[in-house]
Image 1: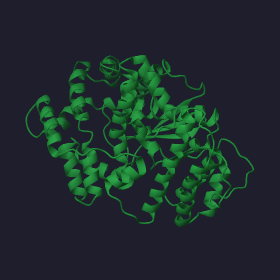
Image 2: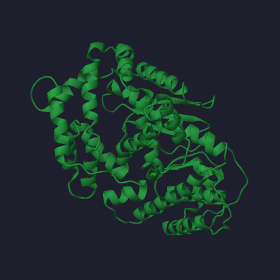
Image 3: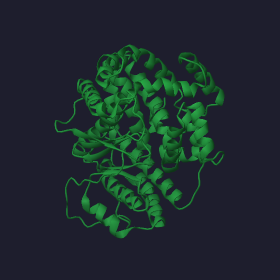
Image 4: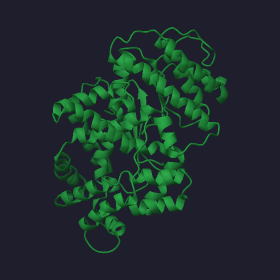
Length: 430
């Protein structure tokens, strides 16, 4: 994930008022007004503007004006209507996608404004309004079947969650080895990505280790092809998190996604709407889905196991002979990904309380009590955002692989095309 880190690329002497009616002429004027509306919402919701590297005076204007939510909602409605009046020809596929992207992002902004004004939506209503998608429902029996497989794969006797926790303790990366393990994982993810994707020469990111956060990792994109990636060390970090975070937050995940958008859409085409990222919007499903699926793109088949066993396990001081067994259990546990959605859906719909949600995840998501409690706090802050990780990955994978046809090089090509486009979640479905 990413949060707000505001870095201005350039200053320009343009006096603008984001909420006053303006002549509608092109998609560029629509885009500028959209950016100013997102900044205006950010004055009411500290988590809303996840990143902005556009014109500094636009942010200053938003802070000075602090427009009321009712005015922002009305301005968004006018802007959505104005999109239909724009007569810019769709010169290529991307310009056609751009129009629908702005329309749907504005609709999500309107929904977020209504939520900030007190409107209550169900979990599924909210995810459709904000992320252009609804996650499938799974009965408890779906997870029970997977848990039975995990039970058979774990050594020893007793409750599966206790055996799983005991099993995983052998794969914790010691704090003094964490930096070297992550650095090596990042280097490998970057090398694999650069073999297929052309990135700006000046792209770069730095890594910080932090505590007291509701997430495990976060990418703060700063513009100019730079990112700050933070890794939360509140909980034990297991060896598999090295590749997960290096890919998801870095290569070919969030860092690459943002760099390609800046290069191809902001700089090459001048589309200012991509200098800002509203977190609670359809863009998040694309961002999180590509970041999670990017792990498989970078490490297809057994390549991840081979790299972890031969390189990362020795660096972490772990027994490489145990790598295959750990990978088997991890693959099974990954199939429980939608359990978090079910816990969040029931909790946010008021069907269960926090304690019951944490207990449900301990039983069905193989989460330790501490991790499960942390996840409920994530639900409080980010709500239905949780669908973007699992449903996002599934939709992205389906979209890319349907076009790649099993060809590894083509998979990278289609993946890169998606990263550098304004495609919506609804546009990923067949």
